[in-house]
Image (cartoon, rainbow over all chains, first blue to last red; front, side):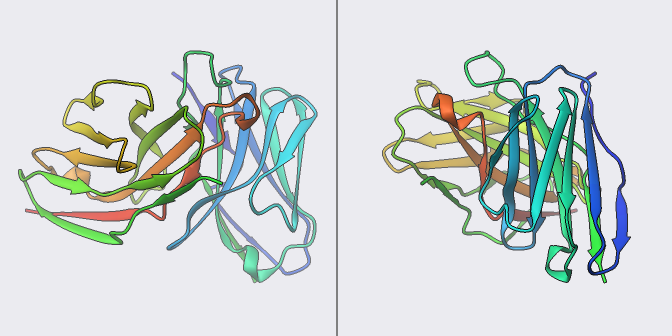
Length: 115
Length: 117
């Protein structure tokens, strides 16, 4: 059974703190993604990675960075958390396009509150 | 740039009735894929159905079917015989097939479906 796990379901942090959100997949997928979900805006792509140590900015990368040191793990980092980063964060993984598998598999999400 | 639009913030349907959730898209890429995901209140994203831009027939998966109208750039989800467990948020998404896309998805705003008994 395929699985994407995220380190926390709920997280409360203070403004200015450094925050790490961890995501692990056990499917040997090359591609991993971080999205944030806000009401009325759907899911928006923050960063993605297509290989170990490779990363690309998504649509809303400001205020975030990522790390992918191992194929199965993709971390999202909020260098200095701000209240406008209060959101639901979803991690996903997939095989590359053209592999015959097109689906993205999602983790359960982390609901982050910054106070 | 690609864009997905879901114009129905909320929809209501009676149990056992069919319901259509609207989705329109915009892309200049001739090769793309369209997805529908379901998100129950628990938060996990559940993949429902996929349609490739070159697929000749509309995709179907059990009670879910995708009404793909390429000329109109629409990819509506039809749920037949609604069940109470279908109450959830539904997202339409698109992926361009080009090599530099890396399988990124662009999502719509979502539609909250409520099924009444």
